[in-house]
Amino acid sequence: ANADQWKGKSIYQLFTDRFAPPSATAPARTSPLPETCDPIQQTWCGGTWLSIIDKLDYIQGMGFDAIWISPVSQNIDVYTPYNYAYHGYWVNDPLTLNPRFGSADDLKALSNSLHARGMYLMVDVVVNNVPSLNVKDAMNPTALQADGSRWTDPSDFHPQCWIDYNNQTSVENCWLGDDKVALMDVNTENPTVVSTLNSWIGNLTSTYGIDGLRIDAAKHVPGPFWTDFCAASKVFCIAEVYGSDIGFAAKFQTEKWMDSVLGYPLYYGIVNGFGTPSGNMSNFVEIAQQVLASFPSPGLLGNFIENHDLPRWRNQTTDPQLAYNAMVTQFMFDGLPVVYYGQEQDFSHGAGDPYNRAALWPSNYANTTTYQHIKKLNEIRHAVIQNNTLFNGKNFLDSQTTIVASTKTDVAFRKGPLLAVLTNRGSPNVPQAFGVPTSGWSAQSAVIDLLSCKQYAVGSGGAISVSYAASGYGGMPYVFVSQTDAAALKICGDV
Ligand code: ABC
Ligand code: CA
Image (cartoon, rainbow, N blue to C red; front, top):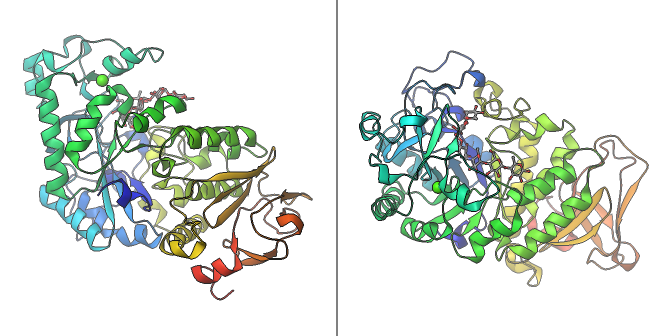
Protein backbone atom coordinates (compact mmCIF):
# COMPACT_ATOMS: atom_id res chain seq x y z
CA ALA A 1 0.00 0.00 0.00
CA ASN A 2 1.24 3.52 -0.74
CA ALA A 3 1.34 6.65 1.41
CA ASP A 4 -2.13 7.80 0.31
CA GLN A 5 -3.62 4.47 1.33
CA TRP A 6 -1.93 4.70 4.75
CA LYS A 7 -3.01 8.26 5.42
CA GLY A 8 -6.17 7.45 7.35
CA LYS A 9 -4.82 4.40 9.20
CA SER A 10 -4.10 4.00 12.85
CA ILE A 11 -1.32 1.68 13.90
CA TYR A 12 -0.81 -0.65 16.86
CA GLN A 13 2.87 -1.41 17.47
CA LEU A 14 3.73 -4.78 19.02
CA PHE A 15 6.62 -7.08 19.79
CA THR A 16 5.82 -10.49 18.31
CA ASP A 17 7.46 -12.24 21.25
CA ARG A 18 5.48 -10.31 23.86
CA PHE A 19 2.00 -9.61 22.50
CA ALA A 20 0.18 -12.97 22.68
CA PRO A 21 1.12 -16.34 24.20
CA PRO A 22 1.10 -19.68 22.41
CA SER A 23 -2.28 -21.41 22.37
CA ALA A 24 -4.10 -24.37 20.91
CA THR A 25 -4.28 -22.64 17.52
CA ALA A 26 -0.81 -21.14 17.80
CA PRO A 27 1.53 -23.83 19.08
CA ALA A 28 4.72 -22.74 20.81
CA ARG A 29 7.88 -22.47 18.68
CA THR A 30 10.16 -22.25 21.71
CA SER A 31 9.56 -23.15 25.32
CA PRO A 32 7.74 -20.16 26.77
CA LEU A 33 8.47 -19.06 30.30
CA PRO A 34 5.81 -20.44 32.59
CA GLU A 35 2.98 -18.11 33.67
CA THR A 36 4.93 -14.88 33.91
CA CYS A 37 7.62 -13.55 31.72
CA ASP A 38 9.93 -11.13 33.48
CA PRO A 39 11.32 -8.57 31.02
CA ILE A 40 14.56 -8.29 32.98
CA GLN A 41 15.45 -11.80 31.86
CA GLN A 42 15.59 -10.59 28.24
CA THR A 43 14.61 -13.95 26.83
CA TRP A 44 11.85 -15.32 24.65
CA CYS A 45 8.36 -15.34 26.13
CA GLY A 46 6.91 -17.44 23.33
CA GLY A 47 4.77 -15.15 21.17
CA THR A 48 4.67 -15.96 17.43
CA TRP A 49 3.11 -14.68 14.20
CA LEU A 50 0.31 -17.23 14.68
CA SER A 51 -0.35 -16.17 18.25
CA ILE A 52 -0.84 -12.57 17.06
CA ILE A 53 -3.77 -13.85 14.95
CA ASP A 54 -5.44 -15.16 18.13
CA LYS A 55 -5.67 -11.63 19.50
CA LEU A 56 -6.56 -9.55 16.45
CA ASP A 57 -10.07 -9.02 17.84
CA TYR A 58 -8.51 -7.20 20.77
CA ILE A 59 -6.60 -4.86 18.45
CA GLN A 60 -9.42 -4.33 15.98
CA GLY A 61 -11.88 -3.90 18.85
CA MET A 62 -9.88 -0.82 19.87
CA GLY A 63 -10.35 0.55 16.36
CA PHE A 64 -6.90 -0.04 14.87
CA ASP A 65 -6.66 -0.92 11.20
CA ALA A 66 -2.92 -1.64 11.00
CA ILE A 67 -0.26 -3.36 13.08
CA TRP A 68 3.50 -2.85 13.12
CA ILE A 69 5.37 -5.97 14.17
CA SER A 70 8.98 -6.30 15.36
CA PRO A 71 11.57 -7.51 12.81
CA VAL A 72 10.89 -10.83 11.07
CA SER A 73 14.41 -11.72 9.89
CA GLN A 74 16.88 -14.19 11.33
CA ASN A 75 18.80 -13.08 14.43
CA ILE A 76 21.86 -14.40 16.21
CA ASP A 77 20.41 -17.09 18.45
CA VAL A 78 23.03 -17.16 21.19
CA TYR A 79 23.47 -15.93 24.73
CA THR A 80 24.98 -12.41 24.88
CA PRO A 81 25.89 -9.98 27.68
CA TYR A 82 22.39 -8.54 27.04
CA ASN A 83 20.90 -12.04 27.01
CA TYR A 84 18.81 -13.07 24.02
CA ALA A 85 17.45 -11.58 20.79
CA TYR A 86 13.77 -11.81 21.77
CA HIS A 87 13.23 -8.30 20.32
CA GLY A 88 14.34 -9.33 16.83
CA TYR A 89 16.69 -6.38 16.20
CA TRP A 90 19.88 -8.47 16.12
CA VAL A 91 19.36 -9.45 12.50
CA ASN A 92 22.35 -11.21 10.96
CA ASP A 93 20.57 -12.32 7.81
CA PRO A 94 17.73 -10.18 6.50
CA LEU A 95 17.01 -12.73 3.75
CA THR A 96 16.02 -15.56 6.11
CA LEU A 97 12.93 -15.56 8.36
CA ASN A 98 13.38 -15.88 12.11
CA PRO A 99 12.33 -19.44 13.03
CA ARG A 100 11.64 -18.31 16.61
CA PHE A 101 8.50 -16.54 15.38
CA GLY A 102 7.21 -19.07 12.88
CA SER A 103 7.42 -20.26 9.31
CA ALA A 104 6.86 -18.58 5.96
CA ASP A 105 3.31 -19.97 5.97
CA ASP A 106 2.71 -18.53 9.43
CA LEU A 107 3.74 -15.05 8.34
CA LYS A 108 1.51 -15.36 5.27
CA ALA A 109 -1.33 -16.50 7.53
CA LEU A 110 -0.90 -13.38 9.64
CA SER A 111 -0.96 -11.10 6.63
CA ASN A 112 -4.00 -12.93 5.18
CA SER A 113 -5.90 -12.66 8.48
CA LEU A 114 -5.18 -8.95 8.66
CA HIS A 115 -6.25 -8.33 5.08
CA ALA A 116 -9.46 -10.30 5.62
CA ARG A 117 -10.27 -7.75 8.33
CA GLY A 118 -9.33 -4.78 6.15
CA MET A 119 -6.18 -4.24 8.21
CA TYR A 120 -2.61 -3.53 7.07
CA LEU A 121 0.66 -5.19 8.07
CA MET A 122 3.74 -3.07 8.72
CA VAL A 123 7.05 -4.85 9.30
CA ASP A 124 10.12 -3.44 11.02
CA VAL A 125 13.28 -3.87 8.94
CA VAL A 126 16.90 -3.65 10.05
CA VAL A 127 19.54 -3.15 7.38
CA ASN A 128 22.02 -0.71 8.92
CA ASN A 129 23.71 -3.14 11.25
CA VAL A 130 24.57 -6.73 12.10
CA PRO A 131 25.43 -7.88 15.63
CA SER A 132 28.79 -9.20 16.77
CA LEU A 133 29.96 -10.40 20.16
CA ASN A 134 33.57 -9.95 19.27
CA VAL A 135 34.42 -6.35 18.37
CA LYS A 136 38.12 -6.95 17.82
CA ASP A 137 37.68 -9.75 15.33
CA ALA A 138 34.18 -8.89 14.09
CA MET A 139 35.01 -8.78 10.39
CA ASN A 140 36.58 -12.22 10.36
CA PRO A 141 34.92 -14.04 7.40
CA THR A 142 35.15 -17.50 9.02
CA ALA A 143 33.46 -16.32 12.19
CA LEU A 144 30.76 -14.49 10.21
CA GLN A 145 30.08 -17.63 8.17
CA ALA A 146 29.91 -19.77 11.29
CA ASP A 147 27.29 -17.35 12.72
CA GLY A 148 25.11 -17.69 9.63
CA SER A 149 25.66 -14.04 8.71
CA ARG A 150 24.47 -12.84 5.29
CA TRP A 151 27.53 -10.57 5.06
CA THR A 152 30.86 -12.39 5.27
CA ASP A 153 33.30 -10.20 3.36
CA PRO A 154 35.14 -7.36 5.16
CA SER A 155 34.10 -5.04 2.31
CA ASP A 156 30.48 -5.60 3.33
CA PHE A 157 31.15 -3.39 6.39
CA HIS A 158 32.44 0.02 7.36
CA PRO A 159 35.54 -0.26 9.55
CA GLN A 160 35.03 -0.20 13.30
CA CYS A 161 34.54 3.10 15.15
CA TRP A 162 31.93 4.10 17.75
CA ILE A 163 29.43 6.78 16.82
CA ASP A 164 30.05 10.43 17.59
CA TYR A 165 26.52 11.91 17.51
CA ASN A 166 27.93 15.37 16.77
CA ASN A 167 29.17 14.24 13.38
CA GLN A 168 26.70 12.97 10.76
CA THR A 169 29.40 11.10 8.82
CA SER A 170 30.21 9.21 11.99
CA VAL A 171 26.48 8.62 12.62
CA GLU A 172 26.27 7.05 9.15
CA ASN A 173 29.48 5.03 9.07
CA CYS A 174 30.42 4.13 12.62
CA TRP A 175 28.92 1.37 14.72
CA LEU A 176 25.89 1.35 17.00
CA GLY A 177 25.92 -0.85 20.09
CA ASP A 178 28.91 -1.23 22.38
CA ASP A 179 31.80 -3.58 23.05
CA LYS A 180 29.42 -6.17 24.54
CA VAL A 181 27.08 -6.41 21.57
CA ALA A 182 28.60 -4.45 18.70
CA LEU A 183 26.31 -3.55 15.82
CA MET A 184 28.68 -3.75 12.84
CA ASP A 185 27.84 -1.07 10.29
CA VAL A 186 26.84 -2.54 6.96
CA ASN A 187 28.50 -0.90 3.93
CA THR A 188 25.43 0.54 2.24
CA GLU A 189 27.58 1.97 -0.56
CA ASN A 190 28.88 -1.45 -1.65
CA PRO A 191 26.98 -2.19 -4.92
CA THR A 192 26.59 -5.91 -4.15
CA VAL A 193 25.18 -5.15 -0.71
CA VAL A 194 22.83 -2.55 -2.19
CA SER A 195 21.49 -4.80 -4.93
CA THR A 196 21.06 -7.73 -2.53
CA LEU A 197 19.07 -5.54 -0.12
CA ASN A 198 16.95 -3.92 -2.82
CA SER A 199 15.94 -7.17 -4.45
CA TRP A 200 15.31 -8.75 -1.03
CA ILE A 201 12.93 -6.00 0.11
CA GLY A 202 10.86 -6.22 -3.08
CA ASN A 203 10.55 -9.98 -2.60
CA LEU A 204 9.74 -9.71 1.08
CA THR A 205 6.84 -7.29 0.65
CA SER A 206 5.34 -9.18 -2.31
CA THR A 207 5.83 -12.69 -0.88
CA TYR A 208 4.26 -11.90 2.48
CA GLY A 209 1.72 -9.27 1.49
CA ILE A 210 3.43 -6.60 3.60
CA ASP A 211 1.75 -3.20 3.29
CA GLY A 212 4.31 -0.92 4.91
CA LEU A 213 7.78 -0.79 6.46
CA ARG A 214 9.18 0.79 9.60
CA ILE A 215 12.82 1.48 8.80
CA ASP A 216 15.10 0.91 11.77
CA ALA A 217 18.00 3.28 12.48
CA ALA A 218 17.27 5.27 9.30
CA LYS A 219 19.49 8.20 10.26
CA HIS A 220 22.49 5.86 10.29
CA VAL A 221 22.39 5.29 6.53
CA PRO A 222 22.94 8.03 3.92
CA GLY A 223 19.50 9.26 2.83
CA PRO A 224 19.76 8.48 -0.91
CA PHE A 225 20.13 4.76 -0.14
CA TRP A 226 16.53 4.79 1.09
CA THR A 227 15.11 6.35 -2.06
CA ASP A 228 15.96 3.22 -4.08
CA PHE A 229 15.30 0.81 -1.22
CA CYS A 230 11.80 2.15 -0.59
CA ALA A 231 11.03 2.31 -4.31
CA ALA A 232 12.05 -1.36 -4.55
CA SER A 233 9.75 -2.21 -1.62
CA LYS A 234 6.76 -0.67 -3.47
CA VAL A 235 5.12 0.14 -0.11
CA PHE A 236 4.82 2.99 2.40
CA CYS A 237 8.08 3.52 4.32
CA ILE A 238 8.32 5.31 7.66
CA ALA A 239 11.75 6.03 9.14
CA GLU A 240 12.93 5.83 12.70
CA VAL A 241 14.90 9.07 13.09
CA TYR A 242 15.53 9.09 16.82
CA GLY A 243 16.12 12.63 18.08
CA SER A 244 14.63 16.08 18.48
CA ASP A 245 16.19 17.72 15.39
CA ILE A 246 13.16 18.72 13.31
CA GLY A 247 15.16 20.08 10.36
CA PHE A 248 17.09 16.86 9.98
CA ALA A 249 14.01 14.62 10.29
CA ALA A 250 12.13 16.76 7.74
CA LYS A 251 14.82 16.04 5.14
CA PHE A 252 13.46 12.51 4.81
CA GLN A 253 10.40 14.08 3.17
CA THR A 254 11.92 17.17 1.54
CA GLU A 255 14.76 15.16 -0.05
CA LYS A 256 12.31 12.36 -0.91
CA TRP A 257 14.39 9.73 0.92
CA MET A 258 11.13 8.12 2.00
CA ASP A 259 7.46 8.81 2.67
CA SER A 260 7.65 9.74 6.29
CA VAL A 261 9.26 9.50 9.71
CA LEU A 262 8.07 8.54 13.16
CA GLY A 263 7.10 11.64 15.13
CA TYR A 264 10.08 11.97 17.46
CA PRO A 265 10.03 15.79 17.31
CA LEU A 266 6.35 16.00 18.28
CA TYR A 267 6.95 13.33 20.95
CA TYR A 268 9.37 15.62 22.78
CA GLY A 269 6.82 18.44 22.52
CA ILE A 270 4.08 16.22 23.94
CA VAL A 271 6.33 15.16 26.82
CA ASN A 272 7.26 18.76 27.60
CA GLY A 273 3.68 19.98 27.28
CA PHE A 274 1.69 17.14 28.85
CA GLY A 275 4.26 15.05 30.72
CA THR A 276 3.98 16.88 34.04
CA PRO A 277 1.13 18.74 35.75
CA SER A 278 1.43 22.36 34.66
CA GLY A 279 4.24 21.44 32.28
CA ASN A 280 5.61 23.62 29.53
CA MET A 281 2.73 24.01 27.06
CA SER A 282 4.51 26.85 25.25
CA ASN A 283 7.21 24.36 24.30
CA PHE A 284 4.59 21.99 22.89
CA VAL A 285 3.11 24.83 20.84
CA GLU A 286 6.54 25.89 19.58
CA ILE A 287 7.48 22.36 18.50
CA ALA A 288 4.06 21.73 16.98
CA GLN A 289 4.34 24.91 14.86
CA GLN A 290 7.83 23.95 13.71
CA VAL A 291 6.71 20.43 12.78
CA LEU A 292 3.81 21.83 10.77
CA ALA A 293 6.09 24.31 9.02
CA SER A 294 8.99 21.91 8.34
CA PHE A 295 7.42 18.73 6.96
CA PRO A 296 5.82 18.82 3.50
CA SER A 297 3.35 16.11 4.65
CA PRO A 298 2.90 16.26 8.42
CA GLY A 299 -0.23 14.15 7.89
CA LEU A 300 2.02 11.12 7.35
CA LEU A 301 4.08 11.38 10.54
CA GLY A 302 3.72 8.52 13.03
CA ASN A 303 2.56 10.01 16.34
CA PHE A 304 3.46 8.11 19.51
CA ILE A 305 3.86 8.79 23.23
CA GLU A 306 5.85 5.65 24.07
CA ASN A 307 7.72 2.86 22.29
CA HIS A 308 10.15 0.02 22.95
CA ASP A 309 13.15 2.37 23.28
CA LEU A 310 11.44 4.98 25.47
CA PRO A 311 9.95 5.01 28.95
CA ARG A 312 6.32 4.01 29.29
CA TRP A 313 4.25 7.21 29.47
CA ARG A 314 2.72 6.12 32.79
CA ASN A 315 6.15 5.40 34.21
CA GLN A 316 7.01 9.08 33.90
CA THR A 317 3.67 10.55 34.90
CA THR A 318 0.88 8.72 36.66
CA ASP A 319 -1.96 11.25 36.37
CA PRO A 320 -4.52 9.69 33.99
CA GLN A 321 -5.84 13.05 32.74
CA LEU A 322 -2.39 13.97 31.48
CA ALA A 323 -2.28 10.68 29.56
CA TYR A 324 -5.78 11.23 28.13
CA ASN A 325 -4.91 14.74 26.96
CA ALA A 326 -1.62 13.52 25.44
CA MET A 327 -3.50 10.76 23.60
CA VAL A 328 -5.94 13.22 22.07
CA THR A 329 -2.90 14.99 20.62
CA GLN A 330 -1.55 11.65 19.41
CA PHE A 331 -4.83 10.93 17.57
CA MET A 332 -6.05 14.34 16.45
CA PHE A 333 -2.86 16.16 15.43
CA ASP A 334 -1.62 15.76 11.84
CA GLY A 335 -0.25 12.23 11.44
CA LEU A 336 -1.02 8.56 11.95
CA PRO A 337 -1.48 7.49 15.57
CA VAL A 338 0.99 4.76 16.57
CA VAL A 339 0.08 3.12 19.88
CA TYR A 340 2.66 0.85 21.53
CA TYR A 341 1.17 -2.36 22.94
CA GLY A 342 0.51 -2.01 26.68
CA GLN A 343 -0.25 1.72 26.45
CA GLU A 344 -3.94 0.75 26.53
CA GLN A 345 -3.28 -1.28 29.71
CA ASP A 346 -1.60 1.68 31.45
CA PHE A 347 1.64 -0.31 31.68
CA SER A 348 3.84 1.73 33.98
CA HIS A 349 6.81 -0.53 34.64
CA GLY A 350 9.48 0.50 32.29
CA ALA A 351 11.75 3.49 32.56
CA GLY A 352 13.32 2.01 29.44
CA ASP A 353 14.65 -1.07 27.66
CA PRO A 354 14.13 -3.90 28.71
CA TYR A 355 11.40 -3.06 31.29
CA ASN A 356 9.16 -1.36 28.73
CA ARG A 357 8.76 -4.66 26.83
CA ALA A 358 6.75 -6.75 29.28
CA ALA A 359 4.46 -9.50 28.02
CA LEU A 360 0.90 -8.26 27.47
CA TRP A 361 -0.94 -11.38 28.60
CA PRO A 362 -0.71 -10.84 32.39
CA SER A 363 -3.07 -7.87 31.74
CA ASN A 364 -5.72 -10.39 30.63
CA TYR A 365 -6.34 -8.00 27.72
CA ALA A 366 -8.67 -6.10 30.05
CA ASN A 367 -11.21 -3.59 28.84
CA THR A 368 -9.63 -0.67 30.70
CA THR A 369 -10.69 2.97 30.72
CA THR A 370 -7.67 3.70 28.53
CA TYR A 371 -8.67 0.94 26.08
CA GLN A 372 -12.09 2.66 25.89
CA HIS A 373 -10.51 6.09 25.45
CA ILE A 374 -8.37 4.85 22.56
CA LYS A 375 -11.39 3.14 21.03
CA LYS A 376 -13.32 6.40 21.18
CA LEU A 377 -10.47 8.34 19.58
CA ASN A 378 -10.25 5.79 16.76
CA GLU A 379 -14.03 5.98 16.29
CA ILE A 380 -13.85 9.75 16.00
CA ARG A 381 -11.01 9.56 13.46
CA HIS A 382 -12.78 6.97 11.37
CA ALA A 383 -16.06 8.88 11.45
CA VAL A 384 -14.51 12.18 10.36
CA ILE A 385 -12.48 10.44 7.66
CA GLN A 386 -15.51 8.59 6.28
CA ASN A 387 -17.67 11.72 6.36
CA ASN A 388 -15.10 13.86 4.62
CA THR A 389 -17.60 15.51 2.30
CA LEU A 390 -19.90 16.74 5.05
CA PHE A 391 -17.79 19.61 6.23
CA ASN A 392 -17.73 22.27 3.51
CA GLY A 393 -14.30 21.33 2.33
CA LYS A 394 -12.94 21.29 5.87
CA ASN A 395 -12.16 17.62 5.52
CA PHE A 396 -10.06 15.98 8.18
CA LEU A 397 -7.09 14.31 6.46
CA ASP A 398 -6.32 17.09 4.03
CA SER A 399 -6.67 20.01 6.38
CA GLN A 400 -3.54 20.82 8.32
CA THR A 401 -3.71 21.27 12.08
CA THR A 402 -3.80 24.88 13.25
CA ILE A 403 -3.17 26.02 16.81
CA VAL A 404 -6.01 28.40 17.63
CA ALA A 405 -5.24 29.32 21.24
CA SER A 406 -2.82 28.53 24.02
CA THR A 407 -1.81 29.53 27.53
CA LYS A 408 0.99 28.31 29.80
CA THR A 409 -1.14 25.28 30.66
CA ASP A 410 -3.60 24.85 27.79
CA VAL A 411 -3.81 24.49 24.05
CA ALA A 412 -6.61 24.38 21.48
CA PHE A 413 -6.04 23.17 17.94
CA ARG A 414 -8.30 22.61 15.00
CA LYS A 415 -8.07 19.91 12.36
CA GLY A 416 -10.88 19.83 9.81
CA PRO A 417 -14.21 19.79 11.64
CA LEU A 418 -12.65 19.04 15.05
CA LEU A 419 -11.45 21.41 17.74
CA ALA A 420 -9.33 19.77 20.46
CA VAL A 421 -9.21 21.72 23.73
CA LEU A 422 -6.50 20.33 25.99
CA THR A 423 -4.75 21.08 29.24
CA ASN A 424 -1.98 19.82 31.48
CA ARG A 425 -3.74 20.84 34.71
CA GLY A 426 -4.16 17.20 35.72
CA SER A 427 -6.90 15.43 37.65
CA PRO A 428 -7.72 17.70 40.60
CA ASN A 429 -10.65 20.09 40.15
CA VAL A 430 -9.41 23.66 40.05
CA PRO A 431 -11.52 26.84 40.07
CA GLN A 432 -10.20 27.82 36.66
CA ALA A 433 -11.32 27.89 33.06
CA PHE A 434 -9.73 27.97 29.61
CA GLY A 435 -11.32 30.33 27.14
CA VAL A 436 -10.71 29.84 23.43
CA PRO A 437 -11.49 33.30 22.03
CA THR A 438 -12.26 32.28 18.44
CA SER A 439 -13.40 28.70 18.06
CA GLY A 440 -14.34 29.13 14.41
CA TRP A 441 -18.06 28.68 15.21
CA SER A 442 -20.54 31.50 15.46
CA ALA A 443 -21.93 32.94 18.67
CA GLN A 444 -25.00 31.15 20.05
CA SER A 445 -24.40 28.04 17.97
CA ALA A 446 -24.24 24.66 19.70
CA VAL A 447 -21.24 22.36 19.76
CA ILE A 448 -20.83 18.85 21.12
CA ASP A 449 -17.84 17.46 22.99
CA LEU A 450 -17.45 14.03 21.38
CA LEU A 451 -15.63 12.62 24.43
CA SER A 452 -18.41 13.33 26.95
CA CYS A 453 -21.27 13.80 24.45
CA LYS A 454 -22.25 16.99 26.31
CA GLN A 455 -23.53 20.07 24.54
CA TYR A 456 -21.89 23.49 24.94
CA ALA A 457 -22.99 26.92 23.73
CA VAL A 458 -20.61 29.10 21.76
CA GLY A 459 -20.32 32.53 23.37
CA SER A 460 -19.95 36.00 21.94
CA GLY A 461 -17.34 36.44 19.24
CA GLY A 462 -17.26 32.67 18.77
CA ALA A 463 -15.62 31.94 22.12
CA ILE A 464 -15.70 28.55 23.82
CA SER A 465 -14.87 28.23 27.47
CA VAL A 466 -14.31 25.05 29.44
CA SER A 467 -14.26 24.96 33.21
CA TYR A 468 -12.01 22.71 35.25
CA ALA A 469 -13.87 23.45 38.49
CA ALA A 470 -16.82 21.15 38.70
CA SER A 471 -16.52 18.19 36.39
CA GLY A 472 -15.16 15.89 39.06
CA TYR A 473 -12.39 15.02 36.62
CA GLY A 474 -10.30 18.19 36.68
CA GLY A 475 -8.36 18.82 33.48
CA MET A 476 -10.23 16.61 31.03
CA PRO A 477 -9.64 16.79 27.29
CA TYR A 478 -12.40 17.98 24.93
CA VAL A 479 -12.97 17.30 21.24
CA PHE A 480 -15.64 19.66 19.87
CA VAL A 481 -17.62 19.55 16.65
CA SER A 482 -20.62 21.56 15.56
CA GLN A 483 -23.96 20.04 16.50
CA THR A 484 -24.78 19.47 12.83
CA ASP A 485 -21.53 17.62 12.28
CA ALA A 486 -22.03 15.62 15.47
CA ALA A 487 -25.38 14.45 14.15
CA ALA A 488 -23.73 13.23 10.95
CA LEU A 489 -20.87 11.53 12.77
CA LYS A 490 -23.22 9.55 15.06
CA ILE A 491 -20.52 9.23 17.74
CA CYS A 492 -22.94 10.58 20.33
CA GLY A 493 -26.12 9.15 18.83
CA ASP A 494 -28.90 11.64 18.03
CA VAL A 495 -27.80 15.05 19.19
C1 ABC B 1 20.87 -3.58 24.25
C2 ABC B 1 20.25 -4.18 25.50
C3 ABC B 1 19.83 -3.10 26.47
C4 ABC B 1 21.02 -2.22 26.78
C5 ABC B 1 21.59 -1.65 25.49
C6 ABC B 1 22.83 -0.84 25.76
O1 ABC B 1 21.93 -2.72 24.59
O2 ABC B 1 19.11 -4.95 25.11
O3 ABC B 1 19.33 -3.69 27.64
O4 ABC B 1 20.60 -1.17 27.61
C7 ABC B 1 18.25 -3.14 19.67
C8 ABC B 1 17.47 -3.75 20.83
C9 ABC B 1 17.98 -3.23 22.16
C10 ABC B 1 19.48 -3.40 22.27
C11 ABC B 1 20.12 -2.67 21.07
C12 ABC B 1 21.65 -2.74 21.07
O5 ABC B 1 19.64 -3.27 19.87
O6 ABC B 1 16.11 -3.42 20.69
O7 ABC B 1 17.35 -3.94 23.22
O8 ABC B 1 19.92 -2.81 23.50
O9 ABC B 1 22.07 -4.07 21.04
C13 ABC B 1 16.63 1.25 17.00
C14 ABC B 1 15.57 0.28 17.56
C15 ABC B 1 16.13 -0.38 18.78
C16 ABC B 1 17.26 -1.31 18.34
C17 ABC B 1 18.18 -0.67 17.40
C18 ABC B 1 19.38 -1.40 16.99
C19 ABC B 1 17.88 0.51 16.75
O10 ABC B 1 14.37 0.98 17.76
O11 ABC B 1 15.17 -1.11 19.51
O12 ABC B 1 17.95 -1.75 19.57
O13 ABC B 1 18.99 -2.22 15.88
C20 ABC B 1 19.98 5.17 18.74
C21 ABC B 1 19.67 4.90 17.28
C22 ABC B 1 18.30 4.29 17.10
C23 ABC B 1 18.12 3.07 18.01
C24 ABC B 1 18.35 3.53 19.44
C25 ABC B 1 18.21 2.40 20.44
O14 ABC B 1 19.70 4.05 19.54
O15 ABC B 1 19.76 6.10 16.56
O16 ABC B 1 18.17 3.89 15.75
N1 ABC B 1 16.79 2.45 17.84
C26 ABC B 1 20.40 9.87 21.07
C27 ABC B 1 20.71 9.71 19.61
C28 ABC B 1 19.84 8.62 19.00
C29 ABC B 1 20.04 7.34 19.77
C30 ABC B 1 19.61 7.61 21.23
C31 ABC B 1 19.68 6.36 22.10
O17 ABC B 1 20.47 8.62 21.75
O18 ABC B 1 20.52 10.92 18.92
O19 ABC B 1 20.21 8.42 17.65
O20 ABC B 1 19.24 6.31 19.19
O21 ABC B 1 20.98 5.89 22.14
C32 ABC B 1 17.07 13.47 23.04
C33 ABC B 1 17.94 13.84 21.88
C34 ABC B 1 18.25 12.60 21.08
C35 ABC B 1 18.89 11.57 21.96
C36 ABC B 1 17.97 11.27 23.14
C37 ABC B 1 18.54 10.21 24.06
O22 ABC B 1 17.70 12.46 23.85
O23 ABC B 1 17.24 14.76 21.06
O24 ABC B 1 19.07 12.90 19.97
O25 ABC B 1 19.07 10.38 21.18
O26 ABC B 1 16.81 14.59 23.82
CA1 CA C 1 25.43 2.98 8.66
